[in-house]
Amino acid sequence: MTNPINSAVLGTIASLGNMGTTESRTGKGNWFEAFGEAWGKALDTQADAITAQSDVVSQGGDKPSDITQLTTESMRMSFMANSSHSSIDSVSKALETMARKN
Image (cartoon, rainbow, N blue to C red; front, side, top):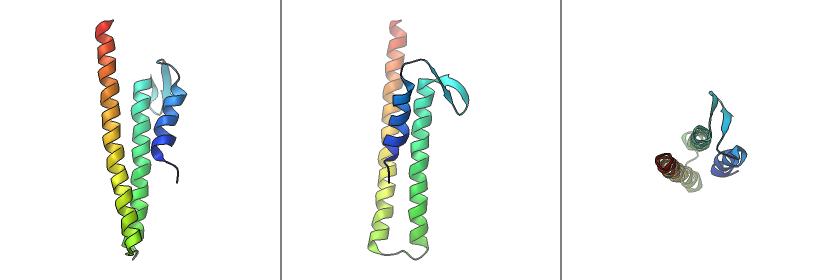
C-alpha cells in the first residue's frame, strides 16, 4: 500500500512549483488551496482504508491480526489529521507574517 501522505500531499506540493496559481477541482485557486485539497484527498484515502478494514472485521474477520490492522489504520488517520492541521496552521501563519511584512 502506498503512503497516502506521500502520494497525495507531497505529490501535489512538488507539482505546485512556485507560489502562483494552480488548477484545483473547484477551478482556479492558489497553492495554499491546493495544499489543503491535497491533505483532504490524503485523509479521504485513509478513511477508505479504515472502511475497507472495518468491512473485513464486520464480516467475521475477528482474528487479532484483523483487529490490529483496523487499529493501525485508525491510528494512522489520527496521525494524518493532526499532521494536516499542524502543517496548514504553520503555512497560514507564515503567509500571515509575509503579508504583514509587505
